Image 1 (cartoon, rainbow, N blue to C red):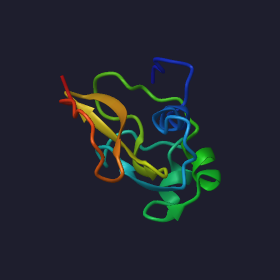
Image 2: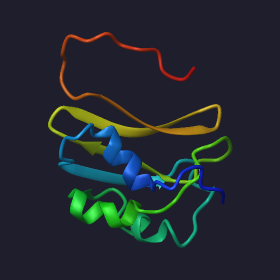
Image 3: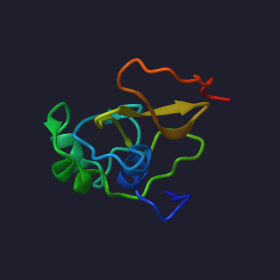
Length: 114
């Protein structure tokens, strides 16, 4: 595994929160369930599908991961702040932590992926 930054998966999720407190997190399977399961993911996979606080989820997601091309090297997540929904997506094998508005608000949508 090659970590592209010194930041962890949890750091990237927190950055996507934009300074808002993360209220809840649900951890899912690995992005492609049959790829990449190793000891880094075991604690989070043991809690998959549960609604967790950020305090509970952060240690489970505080691992380095390769966000470059290839199979996802992290678990799927959905996290909520007061105003955002945060999730992980892949495009052409590249992994990103992204967010969207939690409620309808005036804004200029952008095309993801490119």
